[in-house]
Length: 229
Image (tube, rainbow, N blue to C red; front, top):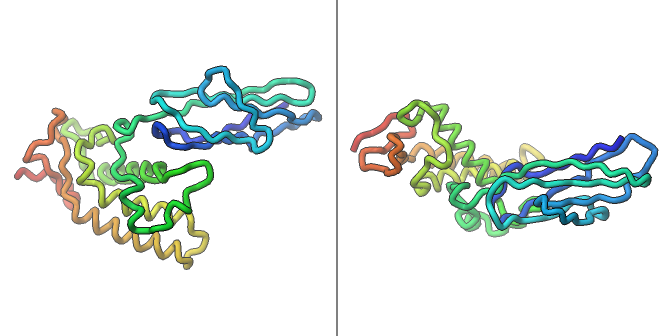
């Protein structure tokens, strides 16, 4: 029996490079695995990736996209597996910061982009998730009592400093392999800056969900209260 294993990002942004990896696929049978192929968008076009067993790709259109992997063994048995990647437009992703916001802090930062990617948008997205979780933990909710999601944030400028320092912390935490190495020190420094940015933040949030941020809709991140100006 052959098991097709697909490693991929669940969410990517339009035109952002991503890697579809099937190198962890395996067989417990006597036949060898001879041909590895990937169809990145379920178009019927399979790319032979036998040599490296992965495909780097980017998507031009947003929407849920089906990825199909196909492996053929030496007995010509064919095994397939598929996954769905959610491709977001820039506006749908609504990230609170981007690479231009962080490069000025570390000139050689892009040297540390992980294999199969050409940006840190995945880390900005992780920072966004962390920030939204922080709002939830502080009970900063919409008027109906539900938590804010990325689409609810109409003014990302209010979140930019907080997001870029969280992103930098995440990047260097991922690079670090020792608690006392230079990357760990950088992660600690950016963590401190993120905390300061959060403490200074006075966020303009669309509390009543009418699609407009009004002058009295400003939330104090420290107290978690809506301040009416």
